[in-house]
Structures are given as C-alpha cells and as structure tokens.
Image (tube, rainbow, N blue to C red; front, top):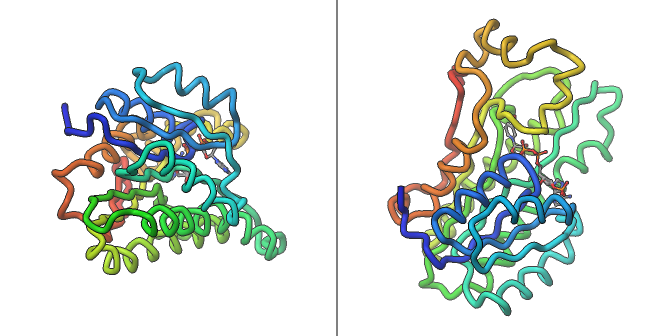
Length: 250
Ligand SMILES: NC(=O)c1ccc[n+]([C@@H]2O[C@H](COP(=O)([O-])OP(=O)(O)OC[C@H]3O[C@@H](n4cnc5c(N)ncnc54)[C@H](OP(=O)(O)O)[C@@H]3O)[C@@H](O)[C@H]2O)c1
C-alpha cells in the first residue's frame, strides 16, 4: 500500500531493534528518508542493511542524555531542512518488587520512556514552521492500563506517556501536528527474551491463559500502524492511545 510518504523525513528512535527496526524498514518501502536513532552503531547498521536505500542516516545517541537532545535536533534540521514526523520506539522496562523499586529504578524508566520523548517533541516542534504538518507517534504499552505485578516503574512511565500525548494534542492542533501513542500487548521482539527463563513457550502461555489469544504480535503489524499514522489519511486522529491487542480484552 502506498501512503504518499515519498521523500519525507522521519526520525525513528529505537531503530536498532524490534518495533523501531520494523518501522524503519516499512518507511523505506514508502520511499521515505529515515533518521535512525539508538545507541548501538552496529545494530543501527544492521537495520540500514534491511532498508531500501534512500537518504537515511544513523545517529548513535543515548536519549537519556536529555540535555543534548536539542543538539541532535538542530543537527537534523541543518542536514534535512524539514522533519515530517517522529516515531518514538526507544523504550525499556524494569520489573522489581516494591522493596527494590527505588527512586533510581523509577527514574530510569521515566527517562527513556517519557522524559526523552517529551524533550524530543519539544525540540522538534519548537523549530518547525507553524504550517508544516507533523505527525508524532510513540509506542506505549498495554502495561499502562494493567495491574501486572512488579511493573510499577514501567507501567507508570507508559501511563505518563499516554497522558502527555492526550494533553499535548490539544496544544499541538494549532501547530498542525498530530500526536498519538500506540498501545500494544506483547510483541514478538528481543524485549521479551526474559520470558525464556520463565516459560517453556511464552506464546503458548498467553494463548492458553486467554490473555492474548491471538498470540504474540508481529512487530511489522505495529510498524504498519505507525506508517498509517504518518499519512494524510490519519490527519483527523490525535490525542489517542491506540491499542493493538492480540485479542487481549483491554
Ligand atoms: N515487545 C513488547 O512486547 C512490547 C509491548 C508493548 C510495548 N513495547 C514498547 O515498544 C517499544 C519498543 O520495544 P521493542 O519490543 O522493540 O524493544 P527492543 O527490541 O528491546 O528495542 C528497544 C529499542 O530502544 C532503544 N533504546 C533503549 N534505550 C535507549 C537509550 N537510552 N537511548 C537510545 N535508544 C535506546 C534500543 O536501542 P539501543 O540498545 O541500540 O540503544 C532499541 O533499539 C518500547 O517502548 C517498549 O516498551 C514493547
């Protein structure tokens, strides 16, 4: 399907793995130019090798260096002139009991899942010509609305992200900018490697328990939703937390 994203410039964070990598590949199929952001240079290169070539560039950067995000954005504007969208897929989740849920643990998840996102949006929108349309999507999680044990830090950071998107959408309407989160249930990426220690077959487990009867979600299904949200067809959707649920009833 063609969504008329040819020649447009998109920042994709978390581009070295999982959902972010799938987003980069899908955007390249639309002939977009992608600015890939993550820390691991080698894995960014692997993503680039999977993409259809265009004016892509990889930036190795730790987004938790919040005070330097403005420099990265200034550099991108200098090289690309315009930015048409952000797809924020960088993320991290900590599972700890209350006893171990210290301020440091809470702060670590907030930094990458929430603070860095808001700062990136702030820097990109600040220097955008008012009339130039912009589309912003961040990957939240079904965890933001569940009671999953030990996920205080992660769930709260994703709930903060969902809330920020709802609130910012109102302000950003006059800046011709839409902003949404996608709220997936379990997606088949390396982030789930930890389940190997806990379950013989995690896919079977979530199907059998009825939590996610459709099984793990393909990261490319999430990526295709982000591509749609970048398109003109999605111009009337903003401030939403959009589920991709795998059959989960939430
Ligand atoms: N997989 C799931 O079941 C699932 C479900 C719901 C929501 N999500 C959310 O979806 C998003 C993507 O997850 P995924 O499953 O694709 O995980 P993943 O495969 O582990 O990818 C995470 C990405 O985030 C990047 N990243 C992490 N910390 C970073 C930092 N400090 N600075 C820059 N980049 C950083 C990683 O790159 P580097 O290590 O190279 O920096 C990597 O590219 C996350 O927000 C996750 O919470 C995942």
